[in-house]
Length: 148
Image 1 (spheres, one colour):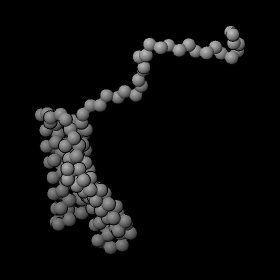
Image 2 (tube, helix red, strand yellow; image 1 turned 60 degrees about the horizontal axis):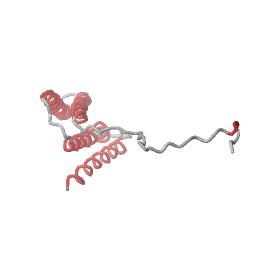
Image 3 (cartoon, rainbow, N blue to C red; image 1 turned 120 degrees about the vertical axis):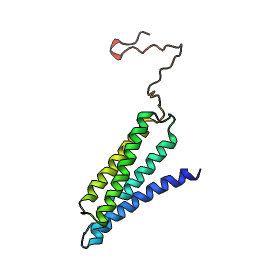
Image 4 (cartoon, rainbow, N blue to C red; image 1 turned 180 degrees about the vertical axis):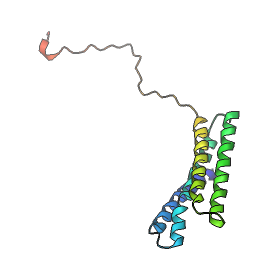
């Protein structure tokens, strides 16, 4: 039961932190603001990851072998993207941050596709016909007059 409240709260917090990063870093007047603006998608990706976890808990189908390969590749892309971002800030060129963010988002997309595929199927029934025995006759149109 706590995860029903905790996971959406973490997802919401990630979105709010991401928005704060953008608002604070938008002027880009100093290096800290530039870093905040560059990293503003990271808390948002955490929110998407929490959403993927929520979909995983709701899924009713087991993970198949192809899905395991896609999830492993997506996890490797996320891990390599995070390592690339950390390396870009610590030692490498800063331009690698954007490539790392791209890898993180591609890995999350792979996980999202697998989790959406695992969701329970729902029948879509929009129209329902009554199977009643009573058949009402339509009234005569006004131009034919009444037959009293």
